[in-house]
Amino acid sequence: MTNPVPIVPFALDDRQQAARGWFESLRDRICAEFESIEREADSDAAFAFMPWDREAEGQAAGDGGGGVRGVMKGKVFEKVGVNVSTVGGEFAPGFAQTIHGADENPAFFATGISLVAHMANPHVPAVHMNTRYLVTTKSWFGGGADLNPPLPREEDTAHFHAVLKDACDAHDPDHYPRFKAWADDYFFIPHRGVHRGVGGIFYDHLECVDDAAFDANFAFTRAVGDAFLAAFPPIVRRRMGEPWSDADYRTMLEWRGRYAEFNLVHDRGTLFGLKTGGNIDAILMSLPPMASWS
Image 1 (tube, rainbow, N blue to C red):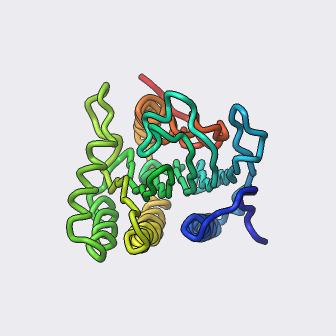
Image 2 (cartoon, rainbow, N blue to C red):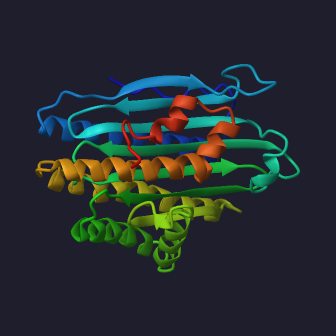
């Protein structure tokens, strides 16, 4: 069975189509891998896919493209969402001035993949991954991945970072230290004075000023997607069978509260989705199924 893809009624250029195709193929590989993990745990959980149309003032539903929200609730993955979208149109007045290259011309195109997994076992880290390609009067790639364990384990943190570092180093030795520091800065919760997790990488505005720059930045973005598949599933398999206590579970629920606070108050991706006519359920799929505040 072929997973559904967004309906895009407008023409895409070669760059846009290449990026879109990659993000959708990465979605399929990730979903297949996560379902395979569920089978290893004697679970028949599978992703349910829900298409949606972009809705924006002055644009008929669907004319601006849309996305497909994929959600699975299983034995290992308490809740995981893997979303793809390809949208275009114009940014709303006021918001356009906050976007790279859109201050004078609000027209935009965006395609990408976004993933958040909240796990059933407190010893298995939650995780976030997103990569995207945007076009305004400029064009660029952005994205990253970060690990969010309620109960951090040095072995898992070291593995996750080592895989991402290898992916970065293959393209530019300056990428990993720069993008790791960017993640540490971005995924910080100011009102709590703590980081959201144990970090990863975060990058934005890898400018595609010509075909050579596009090819290089697209290759790196593909490497980030491949690295995610090499980094996260081994951690899940290593931890998903470990016993956990009520205290571990309470720690996870409180940590999830911090995660929710960050995504609702500080996350730029949440704001971008809300300001560009995205699907509310797809935008907020990052929120955990349960959380607590003491």
